[in-house]
Image (cartoon, rainbow, N blue to C red; front, side):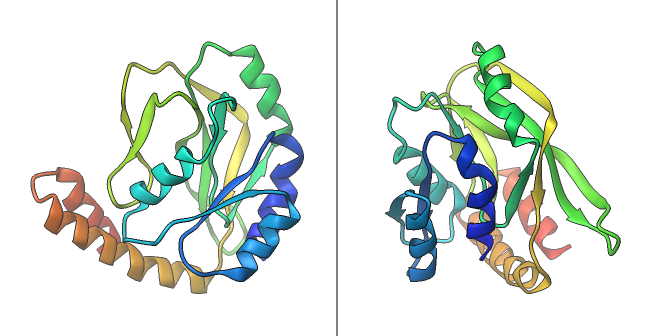
Length: 192
């Protein structure tokens, strides 16, 4: 249901769709096929960066940029994306506002910049087992796009599931990378 909502929103504005399914999910595959998406499968290993790097590796190099989203995201102002990229072709990555959480009146209460569009040349790769950290492989030129916002539109059940999953992933990262301060930040953040 969430993936269908997202793809209806973005499909008219992108040149290709590449979906990596992290587990057995026939319903996701059925929805992806409706939008002619390229589907790949990755066995979930409690590491977001491994799954996301695998997904990025599925995108052929003739695609100049990758615009990444999760199934419970929506994009406001997406019609501005291609004209903005064309106007700023020298930029490697593009950030935009991410409206992550909302109050009971649907006002955003957690908002931050998030890199969402990446040049498809290996300039960055995902790092860290938990969520959206990038490791730069070279100097990158960044541009913040005003007027395009990604909205995280999930439900309470998914939030509760994510809390448990994120704590498990964060603890695993801390055990595997005890010298990385991000490990402790992620565990603390997950507990909070």
